[in-house]
Length: 173
Image (cartoon, rainbow, N blue to C red; front, side, top):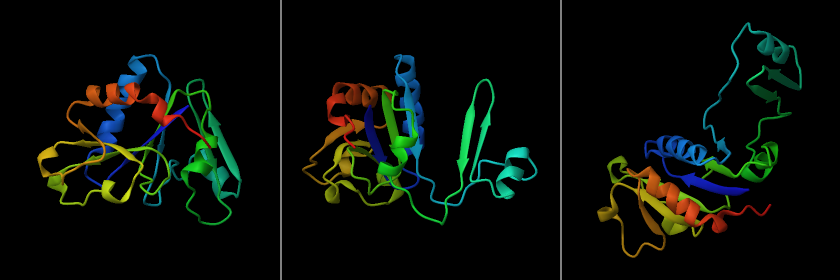
């Protein structure tokens, strides 16, 4: 399994890039999982639905399954931030790639997504695990950049770079 993080601040285009890369990889016949960090409390369920009622009754886990989709909800014993090492084993180990969106502090090879228009700082000067920078603003980067510079507006080039550098993303737990 290859694992690559996509780091950057809100509004930089991480989700759009990851979504497009998933499509590229799937069209190439690869199986891709996405591990997404949610900054806010979120819920995939809806009040009144059977699975919501089971969870509200106190079930530790609720697994909803149809002929096309499964969704597992697991109650954490106490609020806690799980990291990438704890979450990756929950995914199918047979996938070809896992795209990790968010988790800026995770210790894994990353592509930073950055747009000067956001006014947000760069992550790469402080993170040696950033191997590439996907941007629409290369002219605003401080020199030298110790990472590959990729055009965020050409996702096929980002996909090609990832595939050409696949060995750098082999996951070692």
